[in-house]
Length: 335
Ligand SMILES: NC(=O)c1ccc[n+]([C@@H]2O[C@H](COP(=O)([O-])OP(=O)(O)OC[C@H]3O[C@@H](n4cnc5c(N)ncnc54)[C@H](OP(=O)(O)O)[C@@H]3O)[C@@H](O)[C@H]2O)c1
Image 1 (cartoon, rainbow, N blue to C red):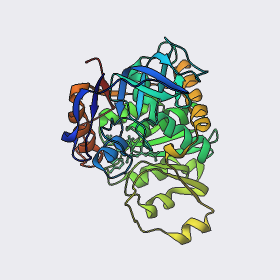
Image 2: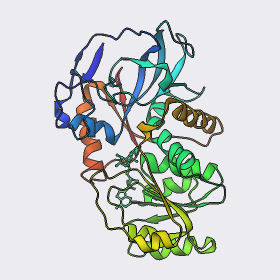
Image 3: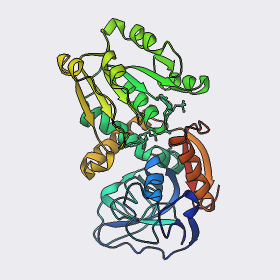
């Protein structure tokens, strides 16, 4: 099969495209003919060697996939040939990834693709959607009527948080970096959308949440959280969700944090069990069917261009280039 793979970790240009053996599904594995994969920041950290999960070479990066079941291993119970499926969690903990024509995926990490959802859409929303679901509902206990602030609402995770929080009956305030992206956040259901580069954003957040006496839930997408700022906006018993910034060592206002009964939830989606992730995926499928979940695709790359796709993701996630709005999709059969 055609695959994008690396023989060693390094810069995006270490990604090669060539022929590797098509996997044969054994046990509970499902062989998926991949219609679309997508790119997440973690794919670039693993490829770069920052996260040491590329443990066998050639190693195929890529967490997310959507496609059609080609064949199943003898122990598979949930799926049969011809079913449309999507999933995430590949390329992690020694598994091979999804930038290929086929992947053998344990059925525990696969979900049925709703009728009407394209492979591109399902792959684009996989990891970011599961992350948003886990953070909001498994960890931070979102309740209807909560006031949620999403710092970075236009990104992959942030846009999923807006959609699922609004659908659950929360009031959403979000920030984004351009009028184009702010309009996008409004279209997803954010009631107030602010410019994160404006000098008056803190006054605007305070004003937006004044009727609630502050923010109930602050979802931070940035790698360098400013806790003086975050804690200052939270209502008593407010919660913070942290999910980025492995190397960050920011100052922390201990007094205002505990005196206001605040709580903080850090999590990584890949720690969640298959059952926890399946519950998240089933809620995502239900939201899609209700017309309340629509991942945004920013651009499409053919498999041969996977190195360029990683370069674009990295330039934006680490380099702050702001040249990407929406998810990058990789198409194994060409764009
Ligand atoms: N813990 C987990 O399980 C988990 C899961 C997924 C992702 N992550 C991590 O979460 C982070 C975000 O991932 P993603 O895929 O959502 O990234 P993304 O799609 O690149 O989104 C980045 C967001 O940050 C916004 N932004 C840029 N500069 C900002 C600033 N100064 N203040 C506020 N917002 C700013 C961008 O807004 P504009 O584009 O409008 O400028 C965009 O909305 C990454 O570090 C990733 O590694 C963690």
